[in-house]
Length: 313
Image (spheres, one colour):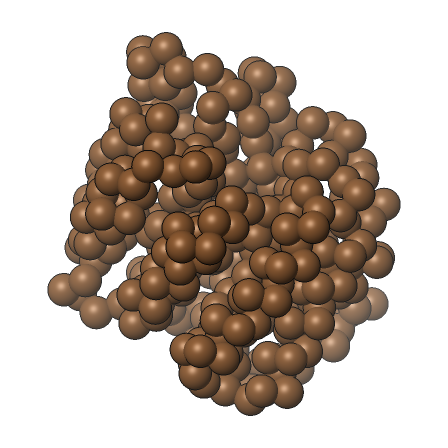
């Protein structure tokens, strides 16, 4: 994480600064990037997005819970989302394992994931394990292996992060070397959590290089994986398109993923070119921290935020 991002996040996450979340104009700005506080309020917009040719992943906001009451609340909201969207096509639901109790107890988390998979497997809903800090990575992979490989929940997918040195080996050991009954969707993102320097590539250039190398590996193993390239980097997107064309890989066999509200014109162009594009849409009342990360990733948003504060309404 860059110094500028760290400073912005530190300032805006200060308990005093968090008070701005109650200002209507700030909330309006935040909801450029957040679908809604409740899934019921987002259904009309969700239908519009699906009808425009996009796929959707819905993520209920929350992570790092050490209180079982919060975990139970998160769990109920995930179940509620599945109930509300199970009649729609091309929708998946993303889960954070630390929001399902991984920070409390491994078996407790696994039990909650089991309940979600039992429920979602009744419908046409895929469940996606979102990746968090590397301290949780081994347990996250164990949970994925247990449900996907041992119990054969073919609706379970997973994320890998390109900024970690270990990701190539993890993919080779966990994904490419296995004979899948049904290919998992593997989401490749760059990685956004603060990590120790010896675990991650040292700068953006090296991370980008590793991202592309991992993307190539995924496309070279298209018989083992359905690749999902989660990036807003135009150069990487074009390089991945070119390599897929060189390999003769159909546009139906992979997808790009982007965050709701980020580069909408680019998203539309990708759809118009005939590629699959999935929009990652956060839902929930814990939107402020997510919004802060969006501001930090695009500092020009900070000026919009300041303007919103000046024009409180």
